[in-house]
Amino acid sequence: MSDWQTWQRQGNFIGGAWVGAESGKTIDVTNPATGEVIGTVPACGTAETHRAIDAAASAFQTFSAMDLMSRVGLLWKLHDALMDNQAALAELLTIEMGKPLAEAMGEIAIGAQYVRWFAEEARRAKGEIVPAGVNGRRILVTKHPVGVVGMITPWNFPSSMLARKLAPALAVGCTVVAKPATATPYSGLAWAALAEEVGYPAGVINIVTGSARAIAGAMMARSEVRKVTFTGSTEVGKELIRASADTVKKVSMELGGNAPFIVFDDADLDAAVEGAIVSKYRNSGQTCVCANRIYAQAGVHDAFVAKLVERTRALKVGDGREAGVAQGPLIDASAVAKVEELLDDAKAKGAEVVLGGSRHQLGGTFFQPTVLTGATQDMAFAREEIFGPLAPVFRFETEEEVIAMANATEFGLASYVYTRDLGRAFRLNERLAYGMIGINSGLITTVEAPFGGVKESGLGKEGGSQGLEDYLDTKYVCIDGI
Ligand code: NAP
Image (cartoon, rainbow, N blue to C red; front, side, top):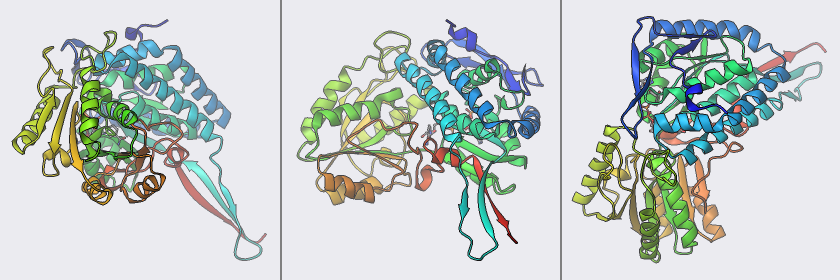
């Protein structure tokens, strides 16, 4: 049994070696529950990223040519290493990020599932033989790894966001330069430690921490990096899409959300409340698929709010490592300030706080799970991601009206609908402009399905068979004169 320190690497992993920044500078990493510094990571930048890209480009020559079953075997070992060390990796995640231990255990487990899923999918990365229009000719369509992949990940799922990029990349023979979020670098670095332990060749996985601009700048500038996959804010995603033009890279973008959670009069109300709790308060409201706007139809509005308040009141707030805690701290002081700003704006425009509404007595970055009623489309959270434990409830009358309200955003990641009317479920699936729709479910992420958004929520998919396609180039071979 390992403990969390076993997996806390305070160096970067470049070309198979653990190294510091050339400048010798480091960045402190803190535990958001206690404010304590738990260690440091190198403050790397352009030079180190170029070295990592060189290592990845060189390793690509041999790794992409490795037998498929050898690559699959490495993924199986990586899966087992994750699960054998699940508790230690989860504790490390909770210490750097703050989420409750049970959620961190789940995050490590789903990361391992992505590894297993893509090990399986790689064996089905089939090409095609297409009927030619003329005799004597054959048309083959073949699949090839894109090459070196740059990966940039956020702090809210520091392990699993990397899992669903690393696993498909490694499965098809790509090599990797990854930059984890500065607030939560250890869960990302742990992937390199695990990969080293199970025997990945040097240079296949490189992890660099430090200046986001410098690291991303080097990734975007180098033509050897054929794809950049990013999970984070829409604002940064747009910058990266612009920067990708110079070397015409593939990009995958998992960006922000503004999920509507719609409860119709015919819904199973208890199921809707449970769905709202998991969708809204998982990770203290800091997920891209969190219910951001809860729409309750007039006939069930009051009953729904009463049940939601009762369930929310029962959520225990505290250090994620304590037993029974369901709500950890927010990631930092600016996240708390953002929730307060959104609350003040809503109150000034007539919303009513029916539960919570202020910082938690624990201090630091803890915030009370909060329920608001009387939310309207002119309040700031109707347009912006809340990223905190604030549940605004909007009242609506008709299906037509709620579809219009739900779609009135530039985002299009996840949406949720509670109804027992099959026809309505189909209509909503057709008319909600979202990449993912949970019908009677508040928790929809699963390895078998393509996770991803439409509109300004992103490009590309992670998970499912589509998640592998994103790491493959398609070639057409014409054989003539047969
Ligand atoms: P963020 O500020 O965009 O940061 C994400 C990553 O990008 C971090 O590694 C960050 O590095 C890096 N970064 C920051 N500025 C950059 C720049 N100018 N160029 C290149 N990289 C840069 O987002 P966040 O606040 O960490 O994460 C929350 C956001 O992620 C939310 O909008 C959420 O919805 C979204 N998200 C989306 C999904 C999805 O699947 N669609 C999943 C999870 C989260 P530093 O940490 O060093 O600043």
